[in-house]
Image 1: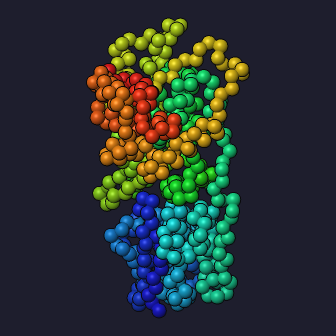
Image 2: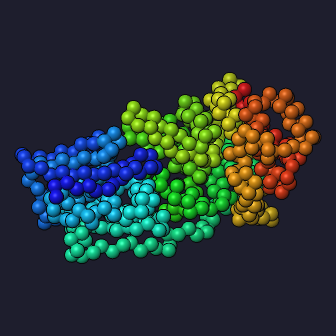
Length: 503
């Protein structure tokens, strides 16, 4: 038979659309052409495939070979199509049976010797193959990552010769046996909230942040524990479910998932303040996820917030509201999930020592105003909580008489509050919108009057009003009360002290 069709997968964000690799061999002058919108790496596969077939003691057809990657309007990139192209040529030449290929999908890069090498983005491919109820033939280097879904059928191979022997009934491939140690388990806490001495107000804010999925901005001089607080937030969050962990791992897979990493851990991303807008939201001619997508279901920590370029910070506005980011290019549009918790930290002035007891600050009012104006009002409006982290009182450090509350204890309260929210609305309070806010955030009369008075006095926006309501709802959930009381509103208002920081 001179025509063969092999199933493979392309990459489109965290999706893996099906690609039919059609191989046709016809009479005429020897030639090898690939059509179907191939990128440079795909076009270069001609030389890799030819050498791999010949070095695997197989016959490369000296005829006219045409490879079509369908659908033709879907861009194809990377070296993942080497293996299906090689199998298509061999099947069209009659060196392996065509019918045997219908129940398989194939991906992998071929070396000149016929060796099969790993590729990026294997997890979305494995998930898509599982949904299509097909077995996946893939490089052995990728099998642990592809096995994360647990119940898919995988055939890891090391070279092209192994696959040919399998389809010619000479030596059958062995399906991968899923290993139990890749299943999620409760992870030990390496960073504990008990490590931080003092800062009771900031710890309380961190607990509320974790319980409701809120965003948080901390302002304070250097050395007060802002970074330590931010790095302890993941220890307060519940473990990812298996489906959430797969979603997170699928994003990381686009940049090669680290096999040694605990893939069920919540991400914690902390980009340097020199990061570009594309580094934060993602980009490139072939769109790749940025820091906000790599922090999906986890924490994005921006230290020294005013040191980021203002235009870089402004790109966070829409993802904070929508929990997704869409990257548009002339040839394609890709959407990445971006449901992250933003934790930011900043100094009160350029030198960091504003109001210092020793008088170390030499910043003028103009310097301070210019420094704080780097944060726009609309961006601050989208951050649920703003708190001050003051210097510790003298003598508190090294005082072992008072034991601090551990992350394990706080996490129990966070879990209880989150379970209450998910039972009530199906989502965390930070994600409540529109009618759901009015439905679930009922106020007692004194609390409602106090909030209206604060709105007028502080000049809060409508967005800030609803964010205060959602934070109050979380505080009430931690207190296990159905109605939002006056103390809950007052505490929520205490977390909006930096509302007009740009002034």
